[in-house]
Amino acid sequence: MEFELTEENFASEVLENEELVLVDFFAPWCGPCMMMMPIIEDICDSDPGFSVGRVNIDDDLELARRYGVMTVPTLIVFRDGEPAARLTGYHGEDEILNFVKSV
Image (tube, rainbow, N blue to C red):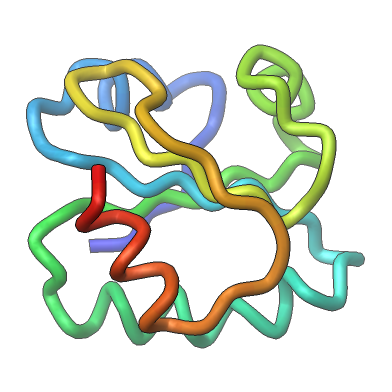
């Protein structure tokens, strides 16, 4: 399942979630972010066994700052409410799935 994350729902959807959550920090003006959007949607549609959320850094810059996001796209996998792994830049579906499964 993919969902939009904001300051208001981040704690309940990510920090209090007992399963793995892949968080995609993106910006609408970012070319690689927009190229990765259909890949992230395909991952969600495939029912990967983990949740996927997206943070628009233009709307929620504080969340990006809190997790040290300096470049978009940045993917962070949260396990038990804590950041467990980070991947920056454009990546294909297989790379992203292998990245999450390695956590």
